[in-house]
Image 1: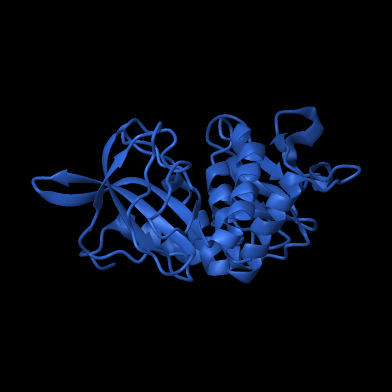
Image 2: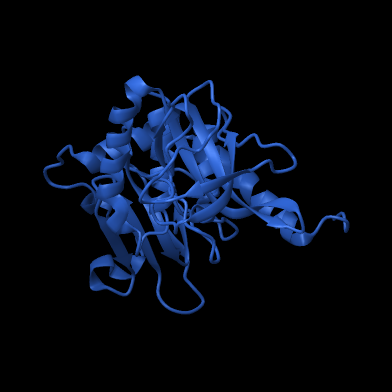
Length: 297
């Protein structure tokens, strides 16, 4: 091993190399849920090689109708358990200590992830769009899925929310983006996001000072020629130098003719899934993926 490369970095790179190809193989019509959390190492023996060395499934791993989930390695302490968000919106918990699971000695019965009478609604439309993006734009989906922890605001920085904003001549209205932030002056930097889902920012931050007043909001004075996905970073000035903070949001900048429809679609999805956040760490990432999906339509 090259001692000049930190072991932790090698581990992270190894994980990303391992999971990226598998996550790209998604059949939208066959997916019935996504993994929310696990206790112990679980493996899908229908779609991956399951050995004692296997990493197993991960958060946001897509469960297919023919998946065969087995508890490969029990946790050191506690019980084997896996939580899965059904494509129809409800959260299903498979707890190996419960008689229903029979000790998880056989593949889980995933049939209960599918309602007896499946119905189309806001949540199913939400998942349809998310899974379509996973199929048609796997690099974007993989990148957003791997960045799951980045969707949560860190520290005491003001909260920025993902959302749809209208492309206007006088700038961008940030009412939905800064709706949880106090009145005051903020340093904000807007960066375009490329087709792979990665922001293209200058090496040195170039923020604008923006005065936010939730009662009398004014547009962020930026000139944008094209609609699409952008990252909005909250910056701070440290010793006269601009620094990006961990707090950021992703915006779908929409043409005026499409803005209202896209805005309403995203707000409906937020309303239908906001209640998941307390027990589902994948929910904010799913909404961010949905925002990217709206941008492809």
